[in-house]
Length: 286
Image: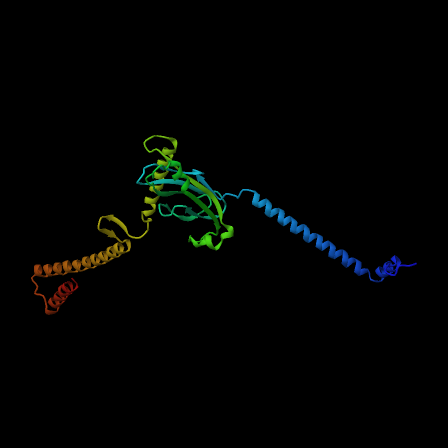
């Protein structure tokens, strides 16, 4: 007894011969589906691998993990950290702290060119220890985070850059506070003093106006403009030239009058008028 639901394989083969594109289409769909699954799985694996790998640093910090502050309760103290751009592109950096009321940074952010470095100064007010409060508790409360962002050359720094490109912001380091005894010499204290001196010198250098090719100051309250000086010299030369010409004309007239008197000849009205004309011309020109 034959089963009605069973298909004949010879009929299927005959159908495929009549419609060969049907089998190739099914194979193409299955291959595309398998390739999509492979790509999706590879993307998932790569994203997981990126999350497990440590982020690539754009900045090199010195010190790299701590901020050293002199322990002087009730006073504002300073620390310093060197930032150097080790990447091949311009990098914007920004400071953040867990204690914004008692700490601030100078500068709080900026942009470094490839290979450029600067020393940032961190200011902190050291609070008086409360009852039964340990020094280690104050260390753990305050932390500093340094973030970086790759930017294009010529971009001006604004803090909103980090809000507009949150996905591209990288956390470089989280620095912890370490207090050191200012009365006791140590390598950390000597290094801190050296960095603070370099930071102060850089700030003073930025305050000085850049050298310009315009007016130069030769004394206090005296400014010489080269263009005005050249103009005055030209005017003095021209006036001296005309003075010499008129002076020579006056001498020549006087010499002619002296010769006429020596000969005993009376000058004619035309001659006298010409002499007077020469003298009058000299007087009017002067």
